Image (cartoon, rainbow, N blue to C red; front, top):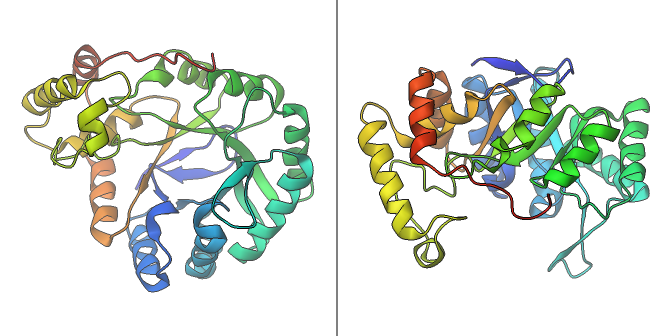
Length: 307
């Protein structure tokens, strides 16, 4: 599988990354999925201390310990479970970020984290303090590089201006083109990579089309698409583009076509899902004509908050 440089770092991540949140807590099953990912050439594994109360990190650390030097482990911090573990609170403080990193290192059973990410962020945070925490962790050797996971344009701008982030994880898809308005151009201009999530838009951009749409989507639509509009758009995409290959493959290639994209992080709860995602990354890139066609069919969504 092809690899791309992450920002200005010396990390080269596979075009498909494994989003580990959906692996579950059954270690044997999770390790089978991770093993298949390695066989397919995936070297980028994304987790967070929030997932399964840290158990996700433990499973990943165990599964990857034999190939640690060959893989890139990304995890996140900033959310704290309550004592009852029924909700979490936001804490981007220096004290919490530094302690959370050390706890993640223990669970991952590793001496360093390749990419440490702020798991959210608001414009009201003490951003300078948060950046200082990441810079400390980097200088102390606990992390190699850092980034943020955010869809908020105003937060992203602050980190681009003030920090040395190498990546931003954000939701981006054919049906959610909001990042194209400002965030993607800004990051590309500054040599900061995008790691995309939500590429198949909750399964809407799959070969099932709207067959597995949730009741919420049927009632409320998706972002600024009504359900009727989704039906029309999906029908046109299928008719004009997805005749020789699947819609999920087109969705992945659409994200990979943007020059700011380093990796498409896709969740997978089965071995077959991993193989399908890997096949999609190895397929032919979209042509300029196909990309323009997609843009003419879909909406150029814009953020109406956090500007």
